[in-house]
Image 1 (cartoon, rainbow, N blue to C red):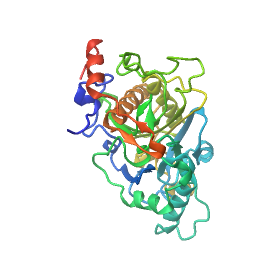
Image 2 (tube, rainbow, N blue to C red):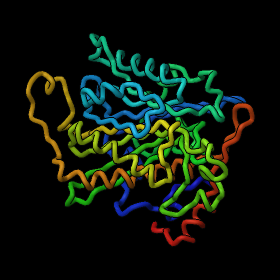
Image 3 (cartoon, helix red, strand yellow):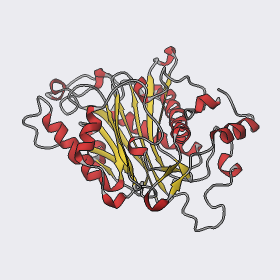
Image 4 (cartoon, rainbow, N blue to C red):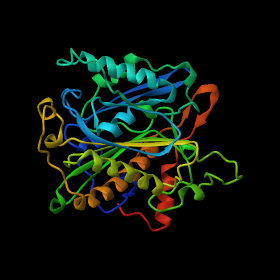
Length: 360
């Protein structure tokens, strides 16, 4: 029997409807590619790539914003996003010690794109979490070719979740974590915009699902036994996209709201947690094409007063993406025999129902 998504268990956070796939790929033009490495007894890692549009990302740059909730981690390319308000490559997610390979793959791919023959600098965007619990992370098994393969595999449609790609070896709240995704669609009267989220979960805390204290009910949570418990540590990578025509400033505001969704799941963003979010707009009206960059240009810009519904959509989509990452994951045994168990979906459903919070 396949692992359930949250809505299969009637867990539907929030009030806004999801898109048709309830995935980041509900935003038109966005594609995802993944390479999963499960080899022998110790290799449990991979690569996840998000392409913002099917064209030349370097030439047709995408406005973007970045936010750090807790900066105990690595997010390559973040300073240029903050400075220039744009991304010029796809976004790669992988493990902590493979950021260099992620960058190398993105640079090689970008330089090889037609029209980039004279490019001399590339701001490769790479995020990470540490999958060293079940993965032989010191072996550095992710290669540049794996990144290129993930880029070549980018497609629209449903997105594989759980123990895939960059989520192959990750954890969440003491259980197996992984890659998760969700989306929200605003009412037509509010623009009808779609917002999508994809997360790489590797963090902890006291798990809450749709308001129900699941971690406490299952007896697995941060600070349960002692005050020096490190169960809140870990990392979280969040990728957000929308077809709303947003400025990089408002995309930064959007990215900051992602951590409200993480808080709903029970995280306090512990000292040892690297929590990062990047948000970009796919709207062609705001895309920074070579022609637009040649001089003064008029650009559409959704006003500040119209941002609140999108902020709300972010919180809901991120929260549900985390639940999907955990529920879609399976139990994995890896490096040195260490094991991460899948969270028992039937128990999650029972606890949420007991608290009268099933709304799906």
